[in-house]
Length: 318
Image (cartoon, rainbow, N blue to C red; front, side, top):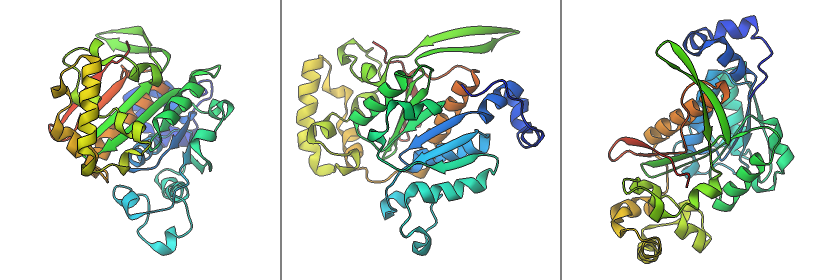
């Protein structure tokens, strides 16, 4: 990942001096030569973009053709609240202009078009692909395209609903090093695809599996052909009927998907900036780990609920 053979410039070494002291020259070199693609610019992804631009990736490509709405502004600090500035410009274009000011050393650009229509070859030029605000089918499709490339491309999906957030990670066959006492240990992990992970039967998962994992699966939205943000509290009776059917089919207790949690997720219209900051921060750390090859990466779901303040890692691999 990244071009490890190229040395840091004198300017890069000076700017990233503190980071180099934390994770070393080699990790910063990999990071500075890496190329990141991001699609779906809501609050959590905006936090992530800020973090990796400040960390000093080589380039960041933004994709989101939507125009600015009041809802999209709720947790997006990169878009100026001035209609004269935002008029006629896409979210990606507006965020691109702001991100360039965070770190002039990073190349930030816009890729227009529908994420679902980008072909396999398009993703070959990136080291990591992060997507949000898209359908379940598109997530599966983009992940499959990344897996069909001759070299490994790290893949992430992220979403935030109400005070809850989720990250999915696919690093395919991943090797990394970590320090244990005075030794450096080489480790390997095997990741399932997004499609494989969410197809794991619920009945085969440990009883301690996070309730948030089950609640965030978007089964109702897929059946109704709706976007997650298009649900409301009025959908609860139909969601509870589906919950009963799913839990009976999967042989799990309905208490694994609590009604109060479903009510919060269904009514969610906007993201909470504090939750966006937490999820975006974790996602930034994970992408930096994957590019640098240092540190234990997350495998393969990270779930967070601000109601109890807990972040949980679930390995859903079958």
